[in-house]
Amino acid sequence: MQKRFLITPGPTPVPPEVLSALSEPVVHHRAPRFTEILKQVVAGLKYIYQTENDIIVLAASGTGAMESAVVNIVNPGDHVLVGSMGNFGERWKKLTATWGAEVTALDYEWGTKVVPVDIERALAADPAIKAVYVQFSETSTGVLNDIRAIGEIVARTPAILVVDAISGLGATDLKTDDWCVDICVAGSQKALMVPPGLAYAAVSEKAWAVVEQCTTPRFYYDYVTARKKMTGDAAQTPYTPAVSLMVAQNAAIDLIKEEGLENVFERHRILARAAKEGVKALGLELFGPEDPEANSVTAVRVPDGVDGGKIGKIARDKWGVWLAGGQGELKGKIFRFGHCGYFGHSDIIVGLCTVEMVLAELGYDVKFGASAAAAEKVFMQSTVQL
Ligand SMILES: Cc1ncc(COP(=O)(O)O)c(C=O)c1O
Image (cartoon, rainbow, N blue to C red; front, side):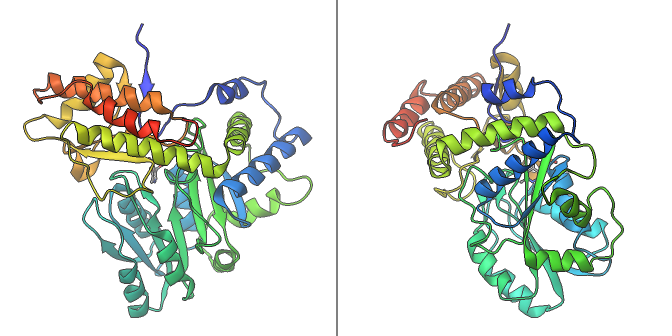
C-alpha cells in the first residue's frame, strides 16, 4: 500500500464532501431535480466568477471550453490577437489558427507576463482585431497575467477579451465583470475541486453580440443553443450533461461559499507563499517573477547537476507524490507544485519534504527539514484556516 498525493495543478485532490456527492444515485437530466442543480451550479459559479454574465456549462475538458470560445467568435479570416507566454498561450494560437483566424501573436519568453501596453499597441495597429486571447494563470510557468490592465485596454475597443482562467479561477481574485472579461473559461478539475469533465464559459453582452454574428458552423459548442436551453424556469442543458459531476460541483461550491471567496483566496496566497519560501530555503530558484497573487502553481528551476527528468518519476514511484514537470520547452528544466483547490498546509509540507528527499537522491546537497521549517513560519502568520 502506498498513500498517494496529487500536488499537481490539475487534476487536483477532491474533498470528501465532493466525493460523497459523486456517489449519489444518478439524477435524470430532464428531471426537475436536475434543473435545480443546474441553477444552483450556475448561481454558485457566478459568485466565484464575480459576474452577472451568462454561464455556459459544458461536458468537456478545459480545452473544450477554449475551443468553444473560438468557434463562437472566429469566422475564417478574422483577425485575432494572442498573448502567449507559455504552453497554454500556444494552445490559443493553435486553436484560433485551426479555425481559420489570421493570428497576430505577441510571444513572450516563458516565465514572463504579457505586457498590457503591447496589447494596446497591437490593437491600435490593427483595428480589425476582433478578439484578444490570453491566460489568467499560465499553468505551465506559474505566471499570472494582469487581466485588470488588459481588460481596461480591450474594453476601449470593439474587440472582446477572452481569458483562459482554467487554473486561476477560484484560487486568485478574478473580477470578471469589473475587469471587463468578455469570455472567461474554466475547468472543474483545478481550484473548483471536482474531477475533470466539466468546463465553463462566462459570456458578456459584448461577447454575445459577436457570437450572434459568428457564422462558423458549430453544433455541440454553440453558445446560442446552450443559452436558450439553460434559460428560464425549466432550465436544462441541450445535451446530456455530466450529471454526477454537476452534483459534485454543487457540493464543491457549497464548500467555497462556506469558506468565503476572500478566505479561499487568502488560503491560496499563504499556501503559495509557503511553497515558495520552502523551495528558496533549499537554495532553489523560483521560475518567473515572485508574484504574491500567482497562487495556483509554484514553478521551480531544476538545480544544476540534477537530472530534471527524474524528479517527477522518483517522487511518484518511490514516495507516491505526483508533482508536475516542465512542459514543452521547459521539460526537464523546471518542476511545479500545484496548490489550487482542495489544498492545505499538510499538502505543502508533503510536497516540500518529498522534493527534499528526491533532490538528495539525485545528488543535490539538501539540508533536511529546511523547506518545511520555512513553510511553517509562513503558516504561523496565517489569519485564515489552512
Ligand atoms: C491554463 C490552462 N489552460 C488550458 C488547460 C487545458 O485544460 P484540459 O487539460 O482540461 O483540456 C489547462 C490544463 O492544465 C490549463 O491549466
